[in-house]
Length: 322
Image (cartoon, rainbow, N blue to C red; front, top):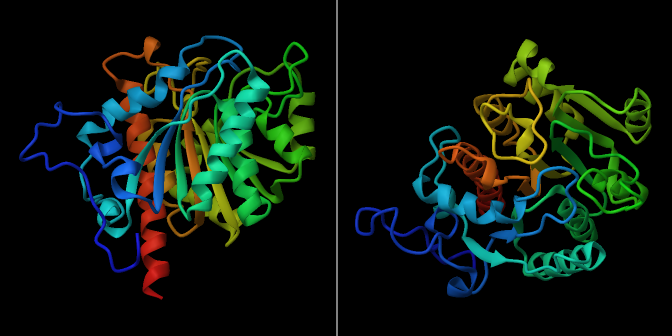
């Protein structure tokens, strides 16, 4: 859309009940209905890289269903994201479920196409394997990017069963490939047992800082957000959110749950505290609805994607106003 066009927003819920009609993200128009978007919400129904419980291939559509209740005005950020920029649902990137290497290449190529239109990406996984091709594509456009990785786990392991591309390895591969700014990397919400202390040593050597879920509990969301803002500065930022950063009480529907996680309130408040960062794209992954109860996990994920989308829409509108 050009700068003088009015964005097309969600279906009017006063005329069409929220439970009726196709489940696009936040009931927004499809990408083919608006031509192009400032923020494209896309799904990647892929979970062949998981090491425990499968099912995240159904996560994107579960998040879309839960997003029916999202509304046009975000009071926490004092913004109407769908009026500030054109946000549209780009559908799913169809990938080969039997060949991880091919799937990674397909996601990268599709992301290249979408980013080439000028859009930023809000990707709904799928498992965390997809973060690597997404980061490759974003780095082609912005150079090495800062990364905030919200997750119970480090995801910087080397291989699983000899496989280089899994949901536990994307950020080691990204560091090795030089697509991350290693002066501005941080995990948030990590916790739980590890294979050994060497996991932490290796992770630190790659440049990652760690904010554990216990740190968030003790220090509070505002202090953590301030620390992250200082670490990121004005660098192009990619945020990758594994929904298992939340405690299983807030996100039971995920493949590798760990006790002692953040609350959904803490996650949302930290994200709101990052509104001044230069967020160029983001993902929310590892929602596995087969293990969910009353859409608890999908609702949390839909609100998480909403906050991220709001940040991007605000920044797009501010850039146009300058």
